[in-house]
Length: 491
Ligand SMILES: Cc1cc2nc3c(=O)[nH]c(=O)nc-3n(C[C@H](O)[C@H](O)[C@H](O)COP(=O)(O)OP(=O)(O)OC[C@H]3O[C@@H](n4cnc5c(N)ncnc54)[C@H](O)[C@@H]3O)c2cc1C
Ligand code: SF4
Image (cartoon, rainbow, N blue to C red; front, top):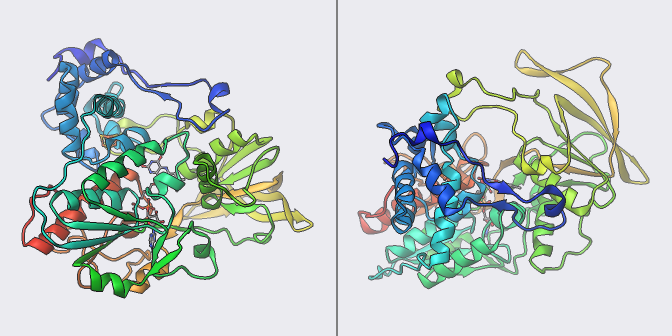
């Protein structure tokens, strides 16, 4: 334990942000990480609890008290080793993880949690700056070949783990660059893509082969699934993959956006968030987009109160929208949780993101009845207030309203993986339409199809980067054990 009385002496320190007026002029990351001295003080607040709930709250089970202590001692090199022992990409999670570990921190019961995520961020940025993050190629090759379908955080974590124990790993990605939703969903101002690029370089040096612009199977020709990002120029059939490789891991994500089939849905100017957001990331990367969906000078309505919606808010403000309104069907949650009821779990409370702070009106308990238009283009949204009663939403009589809208972005989450990916392999689905595969010792990420495994959002449904990393790591262990009879990879 760092400083025995640290939690009594020091306050929680938040990472800084560039001022709003500066950051909305560009798409650059704007979080100012803790200095080495500030991180040390944060580390000193850790109580090294006998039962560290934070370690269980973290989906990759980061060994948080140990790296907190190492940072307090100034032993950054060992801190990054501890961090990497459970998490392949703390540079990703140190930026975009919502930090369920902090909700579970024991200090959070009657004080402010230790700033665990900010310490993680400091450790990994220091490690990259010092040159401590190096490729770890396997000393002995096994001659076994593994195909990974999808290059999001689940696919990347699985690929890195398997390459490091000597397997020949090939990652197939239908888009033109690696990273999944980290690359094309999460905006650059939250997560700069150079963090993925240097991991790809590291993994290539470890022997991973990336095949971009290559789709495995095919997408439907119409409907919401036909609109997922796809720049494939080459198609590989599932049969070919099963013939050429000793094992296949499906990590294709949960890409099918939830639609809102109300009257007027076909009007121009209504788009899925995942049509809008990838275009801006592509433009930022120097790519060309034909007729980019832009929010400049427009009244924008974002339907969906979650993270994806908030990313649409931030991007619309950077475009120069005239107004931005975000709808959430659920009632406004309390500003503070009742910790006695919620700790150590993730509490439902009002969360105001950095994008909200940049300018956004938030409407709660509101539903969309109809899109109104003129000459084929959306001009407004007809809404009604709703109350959640007896397990369902009921409209509040007389509460209809029409709001102006020139651009509507649908950010209501994702229903399931694109059907054809699973059908191509003959993989059974669970009740929610995800790939059916368990995670315990017997079921070990295995689908019903011989030598085909599934991990990440494709298996658990839409989730978080840190869960995708966990599943990729665990699936890699199962595949290694399947190929070799036993595995030295951690679970
Ligand atoms: C806008 C947005 C913001 C988000 N913000 C956050 C956040 O701040 N923090 C957080 O923790 N999580 C966030 N998430 C969720 C997080 O990004 C996902 O949970 C995570 O990326 C899932 O990882 P994955 O590897 O399972 O799948 P994905 O990241 O979805 O990657 C799947 C990849 O597989 C590829 N693929 C699919 N089918 C095929 C095929 N047949 N052939 C070849 N390639 C294929 C896809 O093109 C894609 O690149 C956000 C999601 C969105 C949409
Ligand atoms: S990965 Fe997320 S939950 Fe785990 S320690 Fe880091 S911020 Fe916390």
